Image 1 (tube, rainbow, N blue to C red):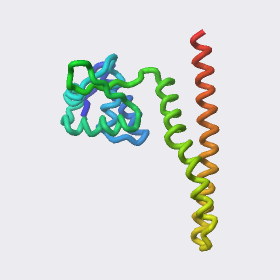
Image 2: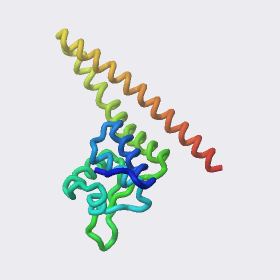
Image 3: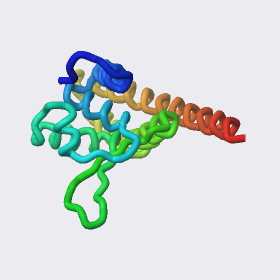
Image 4: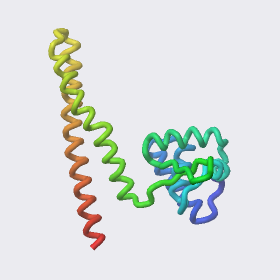
Length: 166
């Protein structure tokens, strides 16, 4: 709901929101992420609602989703009941965190569970089960490839970041 763009900040927020939408997020979640990213400090739920023009309830729902995905962090300031939100500003750290989370929450559990599922499928005798087994075995191979890609990217980004620090 950001109106006609006037300031550089508004233009940046619009650009960030469009980028989020390209990655599959809805309008409100995209705007909330863009606003949180553009803020130098944490921002309250009420401020997000006011700045986006969306209801407090809608913004609350969006922040819960975005927080579960791991894109933002909820902060409670001592002595305040208000929820504040913050987002990592270093895109390299942010991207690394997302990859590490994907590795820990998807790749590792899948690698542990799929071999057992594959073994159960191998005991099935129907043609349909054999077809499904092929799909699942292929998925397992893709998980292994994804694991290597993620490990390599993490290693490369860490090397580059270390070089830049010197």
